[in-house]
Image: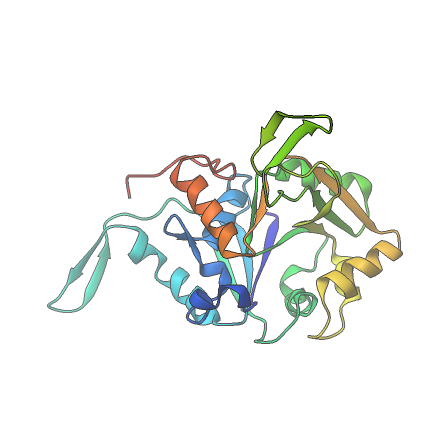
Length: 265
C-alpha cells in the first residue's frame, strides 16, 4: 500500500480568525476539514495509509480522528454506565498515522522526522494540507516510476485572480469573457509530489525546507521531474480561496469530489 504524507503542521497566519483555535488543515469546506477532502481524494485511488505531520495545534487533528467514529456515525450512549455503542461506522478504511513533528519545524524537517516510517523501496506521495485538485494520481505515480528519478513535482497553472477579457485594441467590443480561468502562461509547484527514499538524504535538521533544501538541490542534481497537470487546482491561501472552494462544494461543482456520497451511516 503506497503511503501518503500530508504536511499539516504549519500555522496558516493568513487565517488568523480561524487558526487561533485550530491548524489551517482543519479549516472546513462544506463542514469537513480541507484535510479530510484531501484524504478522501487520495482514497479514491486506493491510497488509505496516511502519515499526517502535525505541529501547530496538532491536538485538534488528533482529537478529530480519535473521535471520528463517534462524530461521523450513529451511536448510543448508555448514561447508566457511560458505555458507548456504535450503531454504524463511516466508510473510510484509512489508517491515519498522526506524527508529531514539532511546533516550528520546516517542511523538509517534518519529512525528515518521519524517515523511519517512510523509508523503503516503494515511493510515497506527499502533499500540503491546504490544496485541492483533480490530478490523476495513478498517472502521476506511474510517471515517477518510469523516469526513475528521486522526485516528481506536479506542475500546475495557477488560477487567475480576476476575469479575463479579450478584445481588439481597435475595437472595444468584448470578444470573450472568462471568469477566473487557469492562466495560460507559467507553471508553478502544485504541491502534489512523489518521492523515492533518497529524498531523506537532502534534509539534515528541522530548519530544512522541502522547497529550498530539497527540491531546489534535487533539481540542481538533475533528479527532479515535472508532471504537468492542466486540470483543476486550487490552494487555500486566502479567505477568498476558501469562499471559492465553499461555493464550488455547495453548488456541487467541486472538481476534486470524485467519491460517491455515503448517506447510510
